[in-house]
Length: 336
Ligand code: AMP
Ligand code: MG
Image (tube, rainbow, N blue to C red; front, side, top):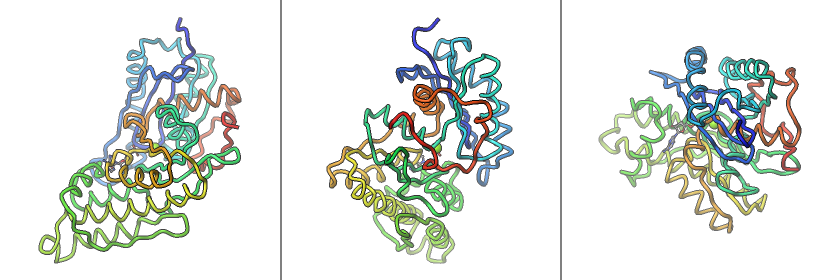
């Protein structure tokens, strides 16, 4: 018998089948991921679903072993309920609902975007940040206000990680493109003009993608400029857009902490830009440790614990997936 209660969290919104065990004090006992990597093109939901179905027990067992737990030690099950790819979300919901009923323990459905912020608050030991969440599937500037995580700015079309990965694919760079674009960008200082599209507080990256792709296809490519120059210009433009919106949200909300999270948070140039506006506004800047910044089960487990402690478990009828649910639609009882 373990002394603290333990939650098992399942992340299953997109490419990652992630399982994390976290105790009720916030100590992460284990974290195991299985990540689908497309051979070509984007994420095909049916293929991702197959991979998750073929790997879920292995990942759960590895997470239990790592934490030196048995399944009987688990007191709470949490799963990613929204937003994400429907067929993929369903696997997480199915496994959580079956396990919860078999083990006769409470189940909590968690919004993936909120989980990214909650694990950041826990890991970075901060209270009330303005958050920039940048990943393969999301680009959101948000902060807690009036009982919810309000969205101040977001992408109107493709997410930033998707922009980087899609451009990389055009340049025949294998997935995930983000880290490779970052390395190429370091080798250039030559800025090529690209469309900078901020509409009010929202961002649009699709025109930027098309323009960067055209640079690759142009006859001037490899004569007047090279791939490093495009990578540099793409990053500078996209990250400046993110920085502008984050800064305006920071000025508006007057938060004293800034949190950078999601897989793209690994990018040193983006960290530098967000750090500099945080400094200008006397706000403390934190990047979520990379292990917890990308999709993972621990963030789901921890958010499940917060919700369970403040509001109790879900009825089974409340555990249906919601692929399109926005984070600002959900009340946050543990912070009010
Ligand atoms: P996530 O969706 O949160 O799991 O994050 C995956 C995304 O992060 C992918 O689009 C990656 O290309 C991107 N990514 C990872 N590392 C970096 C990096 N160093 N710079 C830019 N993007 C990155
Ligand atoms: Mg994510």
